Amino acid sequence: MTLHTHTHLFEGAERRALAIHCTLGQSSAWRGLATALHDDLSMLAFDLPSHGKSGEWDRTGNIHDISTDIARGLMDGPMDLIGHSFGATVAMRIAVETPELVRSLTMIEPVYFAAAIADEPELLVNYKRNSAALDAAFASGDEREAARVFNRDWGDGTPWDTLPTRMQDHMARLIHYVPASSAFLHYDSAKLLDRMGQASMPTLLIEGDQSPPMSGNVADSLERRLPDVQRVVIKGAGHMLAITHPDDVAPHVRALLARS
Image (tube, rainbow, N blue to C red):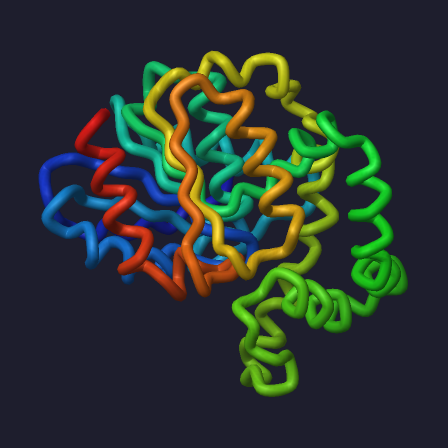
């Protein structure tokens, strides 16, 4: 299927980066980091399918495949890739599959659970137990309750009941992305695990010290697999640190750019 993809260019320095947001987010989420890195690069951001101003995904096909193809199609030469959560896994996949297009790779809280599960299979059991409430809500058709549970576990700490109704509606409309992403995020549908060494460009892994434990498990696994990686933990930050802590993230990205 052909989808309209909305893009936004945060203009800055001549060097170009492609930024890929998280599930339930949109391209404007990068404004803080783009502002902080204005003197270092220009940042091209886009809305994932069904997000922001992009076209609606019809829920057919593998959404990670679709998102990766869209992102790669926006690259007309080597660029720095910056991704958050689901978006970080898209950036990672491009780096593994087409490393010639990637100058540097920044992954903020990548949710590539498959890597951690490969190293510690019991983590899949633990994750399924922890996500049982979300899975049950989605299976029953209560996407609003599924969104509430997801926000509790992977949001920025804002209680669901304090969110504007418009935002709750937005999250409920997009929550189908979570189970739809599982084929790649949990089961490595693109078969990247044995190819991670191909992502030989300078790489930065960023996580928050207040994030769900699985974030650290994933970072541990990726740190072992990637050839040229540095890892940073931002104190006082949770999973949404790309939005909540851009000024803490920026110096580490700037250092990565300097060596790539």
